[in-house]
Image (cartoon, rainbow, N blue to C red):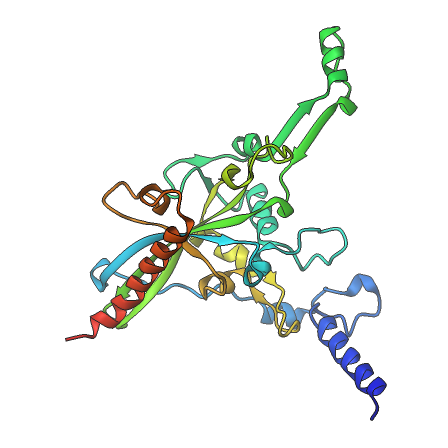
Length: 299
């Protein structure tokens, strides 16, 4: 077998794997039948996210709440970010932000103002932080002349999936004395993007301009995230759900806050102007949590 045949076989194998990423693609007689599942497939897929086991407060021998940041520029976190363009791609592939926003618009998800989930927000309350409406000079001239401002003189800028920079997550590490192991439970997630009012202003540094748009109570979003699938780079015929990806912690995150007596202050509040020491402090907290399980078995 020469190199041309080897390359041809490799291309066919790669294409066949990518083709199997969409349901019914090998049995479809028309392009419109791609993604349409049979009744047997629908019954087989009639499942839900893996239910959490009940944990009594008395079973938690030790616990701590931490907040982490997921940087979407890191390659391992790309499944949470892409695809950012929904025009030239199938309906079965959407970014995490798109899935969350769709759930909010359909009324399936509730949003909160902070990570303590004490104040609910409505979709109308999010427009101020997710949409910028600006009027051009010609529009102001029309307004000053007492005329109605023409739509072409009104510029609207909406935040989209491509604008996201990070995700913030909140979770609890706890030691279950019944199971005899250290476990993690995800509680909340928040998309982070630059302030829409200054997102196109090059004079404003984006690093200090990032804000969490809203917080979502994660247990409430599990069903929606279970139905949405993530692109599996190793095997496109077997995609995983966003719920599985997040619960199995298949991402890289950095701790930026741990609950503490100082009103849950962030690391940057007591280690300022030193990114290296902030990162080392984050690693110290992570190692202290990992060592907790080993210390439980030390006599």
